[in-house]
Image 1 (cartoon, helix red, strand yellow):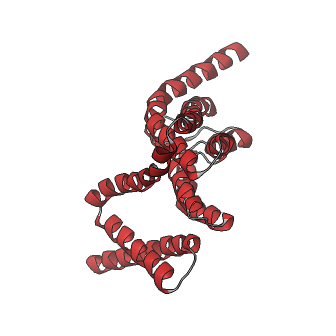
Image 2: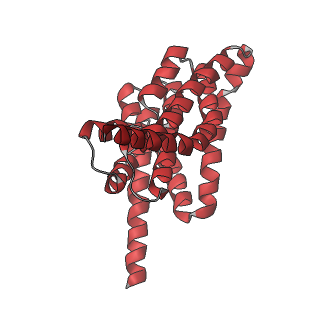
Amino acid sequence: METTLAAGKSSLFRQGVQAGVSIAIGYMPIALTYGLLAKTTGLTLAETVLMSVIVFAGASQYIALNLLSISTGTFEIVLTTFILNIRHFLMSASLNEKAEPDLLWKKALYAFGITDETFSVAAMKEGSVTASYMFGLILMSYGSWVVNSGIGHLVGASLPQSLQESMSVALYAMFIGLLVPSLKKQRKTMWLAGMAAAINSLCTLVLHISKGWSVVIATLAAAIVVQWLAKERGEEGNA
């Protein structure tokens, strides 16, 4: 009986690994770029890899690099990344409905590895998901992100200093690349980006608030206002 159970868990783990291969491949260029930009921002190899090990959130790490480059305080960086990752609470709660009953520590462990991509793969899987499957899935994505972050930093260290300094522009190009496709699909995203930019400019240029707090205030205020306007329009439409 125990042999059969162990074989079943091993099979589910392999399924998770196989499902995670595509995510691991997709993470490679993003993690490499993150490592390269972390080097140009001034992080050491250990700091770069440690951030990937502890945070494991691409968008948050890119924003953290941007905030570090403008000498933002620790609290503002933590608060900003927390706000950005609030959606993970909803993803975890949703996936818990699909997960088979298991020990709490196992669920807590693989909940750490839930990203937009791993959530999508797990959510689309037929039937329920097990801890063994999730561990295999997350092992591939997490390993790819951490390892390639370090490789990106090492590659960045071998580049000429002038090229390293110019690579800081790539950080803004990355954000634009992520934003533009969303602008084409949803008008709300366009309003959100525009309002956040306007509020951030108001805070920094007129109110002379620090850049770190300006980002936090602009993120929260724009999200609240745009969501409220969308809700009001929805209610008016229903009426």
